[in-house]
Every structure is written in C-alpha cells, then in structure tokens.
Picture (cartoon, rainbow, N blue to C red):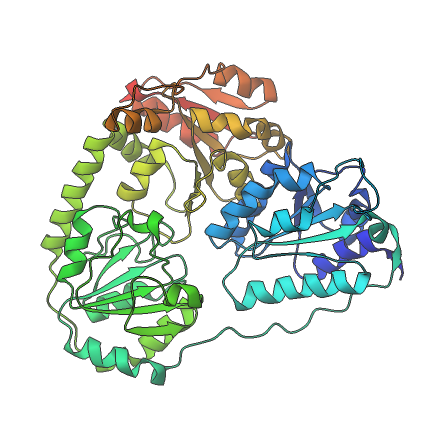
Length: 524
C-alpha cells in the first residue's frame, strides 16, 4: 500500500532486520516517525543526537547488526557527526537517516539551514548521499546494507528532503540476497604455509577484524604466540600461555615482535592508536589479512597480502593446519615475564588503578560487555584486564571522543536484555552525555555505571607536567554525581573500599534501573 515515504523507509528497515532505532523527532523529520510503530520497530528517545549516535554504535557493537539513528536537519545532523566519526575509525556499521531542506540555493534564512549538510556528513562517514525520490532512497538503503555485509563496516548517511518524506510512495522492494565477501580458501595460503613450515617463532597479531572462534585452537596447534589490538581483546580466550595480550603500545613489544621469525596480522589496522610508535618492530616476513586494501598497502609493507575477512582466513588456515609441525621457539615463561613487567609499568605510570581493576574484574560475570570512555581507568584496563570473550569491551579507540561510554552502554544494554552490561566513565567525560541517564532510567536498564572521579582531567594534567607546562584548565567543578543520578531516578552508591565497590557492582546487575557507582582514587 502507498504511504508517505518517511513511513515506507521504516518498513524497509524492518524488512532488513532493524528492530531498534535511536533518535530524536523534530518538525523536519517527523514523517520518519509515522511508520516506526506500525513497522514493529522500537524507538529509543535520546536526550541529544550525540547520545543517539553513540547508542546506535553501542547497539551495533553488541549485535554485529547496523545501528540506526534518525535525526533532524542541520543541528541534529551536526550533533551526531562525532558518533559517526567514532564509528568510522572503529569500523562500526551505522546508518544515519536525516531530513534535509528542499531548497537551499534560492531560499535563505530557513530553520536548520546549512551551507552543505550532505558534504559535512561525508567528512566523517563512508559516504553521504541525498535521496531526491523514493526510488533513490530505497536504492541507497539497499546499498548501505549490502556494503555493511561486503566491505569494511563503516557509517553511512542518507538525507531525504522534507517534501519527499511527506510524499506518497509505493512500498520498498523486498530485500535482495546479500553478496559474499572475499574469502580465503586453502590454496590461497600456500605461501603462508611454506613460511609456517619453517618458522620456529611465529607470531599472530589479532585485531577486531579477526572474527573467529578458531583462534585458540589455531594458535595452540601452531605453537604460535600472539598479541591483540585493543579491539581484538579476548580473541585467544583466557589463559592461553603464549598470549602477550593487548600490550602492543608497550615499547618492549617491538623487541618481542622483532624476535619473531614470522608475523601474521589479521584484521588489525596497526595504526597510531594500536602501536603509539612509527614502526611495528618486525624484522621477518609480515603477512597481512584484511578486508580493506588501504590497510594492506600501508607503511608496514607486508610481503604477503590477502584481502579477505578474518573468519574465512581462520577457517582456511584451520583446514590446512595438520600439515604444519608445531613451533617450539616460544616459552610460557618468556611470555609471563613480559606480561608481568608490562603490568608493573602500567601500574607505575598510573598508580593505584590496577587494584581497582582487579576488584572490578572479580565482581563482574565473565560475559559482561563493557563500554568505556576516555579515562585513565580504561587506559590501564585495556592492557591488564584480559577478556574471556572477544568483542566484550568497547572503547572509542580511533576518534577518541569523550562522552562515549554511557550512551553506547545504553545501546548495548538494549541489545543485550537479560545479559550483563556495564559502563566505565571518567568524571569529566561523563559531563558530555550524562543527560542520557534519563533514557537509561526510562528503559529500566540494569546497568552499573562505574564513575572514576579524580576531580580533574588527570591524564591531561600528567601530560602537561611531562611537557613542562604548568597545568591549566584541567579542573572543573563536578556536581554531586550520586544526587544527580538519583534526580534522574537512578540508584547510586559511593563505596568506601574495594569490597563495598564489588558489592555495589554485583547489586547493580539486578537493579530495576541503572546504578551510578562513584569510585575515587583513595578507594584502594
């Protein structure tokens, strides 16, 4: 049946597996809201478009499905650009649908008018397009979902003129059968297998694109050591004796990598935020496996390059692995000594945080999905907190925005009803999106929010001191965070020691609303 295009778009999204949309309605995009309930989609009302974008990001990371957000023309689109930039750098599938003005050249001074809204969004997305007809809108949505399946997942933006959203339109076409990603088959691995056959110290670097549940078996069978990027944490599971962990930024990791006689990087960008140095450190053959050809041709100059997804690569390798004799060049003692040394370095750099993290890890179920912000608590955790499962710790690694954790955690908790989800934020970053507490309370989420309150931008203060700059503008007046949470209808706790903190966290997983747990550096 014919409906306004805004309603038809919601029905089209439902047919493609979308069950939740995050956003804020306004006079310009209200037609997009006409069909949401009729299509059977849940809408989550954010308090700010930035929050809506991070919620969509958190939902996408928890489910592997695209996160979808609806925003208005102009300021709505501008407000969600930070989440889109974060999703772009962290390879998160996100579709942002916005309204736009019908005419901007002949008419000036309109509500929400921008010089070039589409172009603005394109700076932080894979692409940004305007749909001037129903067929164009349908084709762009189809293209977005196809590319989410086939290529490196990144955010897309589609804007539709207000008059088009209001116009009657025929239904969208039924979904197409999605295409197939480039896949590796065992014959493609012949050069790598030759190298593995003579390698005594093979080393794998597993990134967020190494998606497979076979890595523990593969590494064990090969006798290979591994590092993970922050996004790849948990890929080898807990307790693998040759796992160096997510410690690539440690300066000493370059020496370890240099001692390997074969390095295989799978689904790992190996950019600045992965290494925090210019070179990887390898002196032997480097093999790269990645969907993105730009990654394959980067400064690390891999000798063997395979454009494929990490899962098919893992399956092909596993199918061929019986022909490989396990390597014997690595020892558990060597790995344990390095991990112990690097843990001590991390503890010395930011004193007092490791004991807090150890206590938090003990208090949380192993399958807790954690969303963290740019805060010292998370910086240390990414190196010393080993994950039992992959893709269970999400951090704004690339773009590096503040304010990510709470709304992203809300999106993750919406996706994981009945499963444990937690948020770790710093006091200053919490200011950016703390209004989303209202959305979390409305949704009735059992969400522990661990707020690390050191009363300042401590990481920046430390950096200024190292740079011999007198610390300036690093202290801001905080509210009473516990009273603030209670004003929203949430619960709160201010534990005085680690045992009380653990009890508060465990109780929060069963509370009917979120619980803000304020933790200060003197707790340990």
